Length: 172
Image (cartoon, rainbow, N blue to C red; front, side, top):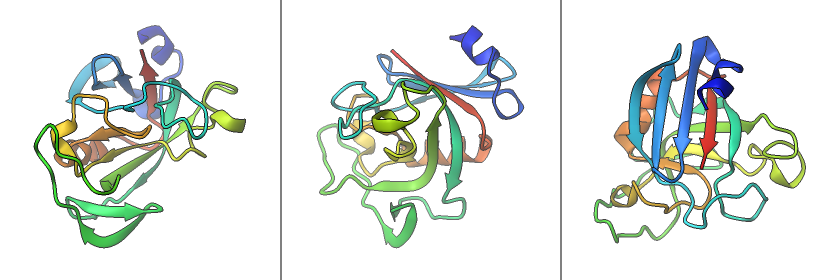
């Protein structure tokens, strides 16, 4: 993992590792661990195919950051703020009526042709994000429809620190 990231340093040496079995995201800067956050990846496991509702593996980069000035809990549809704030659910079994994307979006682009880039496996065309969720009580267990979910406070922290171009390696 470290060799793979070192060989492909992202924006100013920033790299994120999403550990699917551990349900954690690690932030590295210049090879040093500077942050660790609980996350939720896909309830249906890992996979790169369009329509699978799975989290894609492999090397990605943060292609776009969306929502810099949005208030905590802002709901996005089609990457546009709706003006509506989500009710944040903190119970481990509480489920929102919709799979809302909230607070901030880090839109991922796959970097490995045939794995997560191009055709039916293209992470960007699948709209794979790191984003906030109204289902904060489910963070730490697989619960998403393919994206990497974070608490709204954590996604703000990550968004403010990470630059576009930072590498993201999603691993099992």
